[in-house]
Length: 405
Image (cartoon, rainbow, N blue to C red):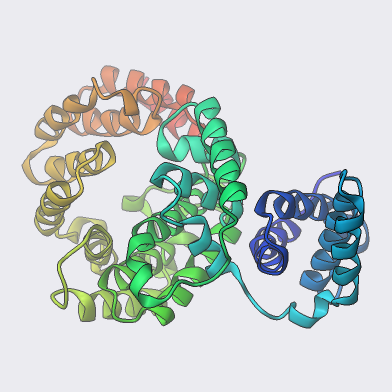
């Protein structure tokens, strides 16, 4: 049985909403998550054969609630559990099926009683619906390490019995950085899928954008919230142009800009233009400004790389990291020449976080090709192709390497 893409997207969108409702009613995050996972499996089987029901969220909530009742009845404290179950059966899931607790679930998973790595890992599982492998890829760590991190986070959540609620304004700042990071990572996994046959997963990008909008409505005065929303809008605007009809990858410089979503670009540019200068600049504002420079350029050749390089310079000062350096190397190459970009790229060769990341060799191959070193570029393209688990990226990189042979 294979679930179609539309059903997968619907289940991914509804899962955190159903989980949030169950946790708000009954606590016990771990048990509720197990119940939701069983309901999702049942839905994947039944909906693939019969189609989705008229009220898919209510359906999932009902099934997950029944799974929760069954689990409680099987435990040793039968009488107390069955009393709770009886009360649950008297409460119709449809009563609150229209309430969306996803944002509250997001803040709960980012509670300061958990370590920041645990907050991120748990939220990406519960709210983003990412697999352990996908989360590990996002953080450049082994899958086993991430599995242990998620397990510890669940145990801490169970022990502390954290409430599911959007915290009052005075407490939001302690969690906001992790909340923004989670939405950013969920969006990125949807925009450039780390593994599998598809380059993009629209369900993930759509959900990240939806939650970013909700967060902006909740905290309209937060510059970094506005910056993140602008960044997601400006990046997602290019989605239709990123693949050919057969699903093959189209790099930014070769994309048809008439396929870019002009309305999203206009909204994103307006948002970041209103935000910059109103508060201390943060990484999401800077990334949104970079995306705006790309999106407003009439063509790849007319891109203002000087401005992009200056923005990356500021970004690297306030939030240094290997991915920022990788992107800045491209900007350096476009301004000062490919050899200058390659020299900066070389500083990442000893960074353990980039050891298994195909993007380092992919960027190196591109810059070597620009520098005219075609044999070295070919080898770098082929190395990058062997390292990525994304089939569209594999095909693209292998083809670029073969064309230089």
